[in-house]
Image 1 (tube, one colour):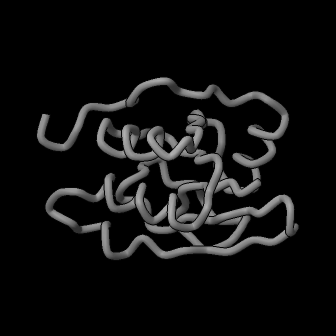
Image 2 (cartoon, one colour):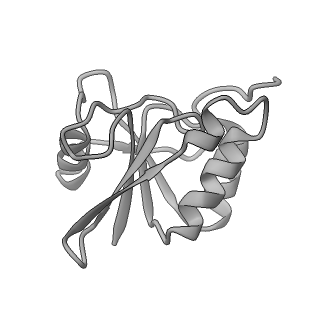
Length: 122
């Protein structure tokens, strides 16, 4: 199982990024292979529009099963949901990628069934 966490940096000790589409990095923990990879989201940080959809497509292409983030917009939510990627939201107490993964593994994060914020153009 692969779990992606939105992050400001490229490792488990990095601070979480509470944005999905414009997150700086996606740190991906592969629990089956016991590996961690970081994937830059630089191309979407300053995108005038479509950042959520493109970030979601990138996540799907990486074979991610679960996303941990602070917020997810409607277009990203629909794209991830269509690919059966589950989305869990972490609260303000979660500070690092490692903490987000621990909270998720211990069942303390809530899976969302709809976008948590409005779209960029809503």
